[in-house]
Image (cartoon, rainbow, N blue to C red):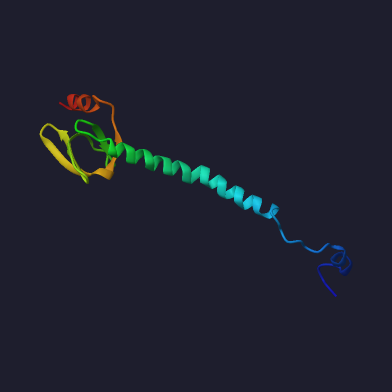
Length: 114
């Protein structure tokens, strides 16, 4: 005797079938959705940043991850020497450079502060 399901209803219910390919569609769709929403854009940004760091040259105007605007005075494999003011230099790691600025940005900012 069952308290929750009558014996007649339990007997009338068909046997559960194993999920086939139809049961895999939703999880695969979720994985594809997350790939295009999160993983692919992040990989694209990483690739663009690597190309930007590889394209650094003397005279490039850059902003560091700390927000410091400077002009590249010298660079090697791991470090970049930035001129942040007249005859004021700092060294930062290459990967700490966030973006390159258009030419003339550094000069315009230093001219305003003088």
